[in-house]
Image 1 (tube, rainbow, N blue to C red):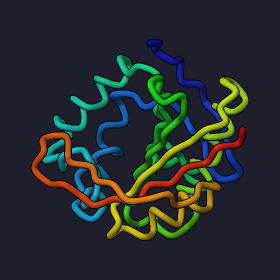
Image 2: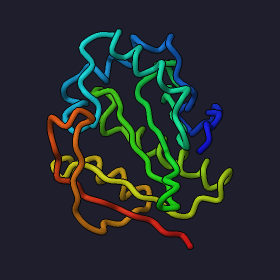
Image 3: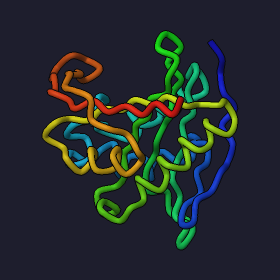
Length: 175
């Protein structure tokens, strides 16, 4: 296990950078939004205190990079994403969430492709896996645009077990 140092990287329209406690208000804009949270594993944040608890845990993440997505055009933090090495499976998984008013603008795909390229360049990554709630086809389109292919169904639950979602699972093996 290792704790990765999260660098600042860029895309055409975004800066991907480490999140900090100073981001709590901006992060709460999506972690506290029921529309964004609908299919996420994390519980809906009820206050910025909930968000601060999550942000304080990020420096302890093992085998995972977590970035905030900042628009170059206005400097606003609009979402976050992570990519994690699954040591037991020898592959990388990723996830993301973004403010509701930024949906369907290509930001999530742009950021995810950059995260994938980063682990390819710095870790030699060739195998990826991702899943989304079957009832959330927009997330599936992001995954497909990142080159992954549907392989089957599964399920995942919220972190407290309060809700379980049927999921679609995608993989990419570049070996």
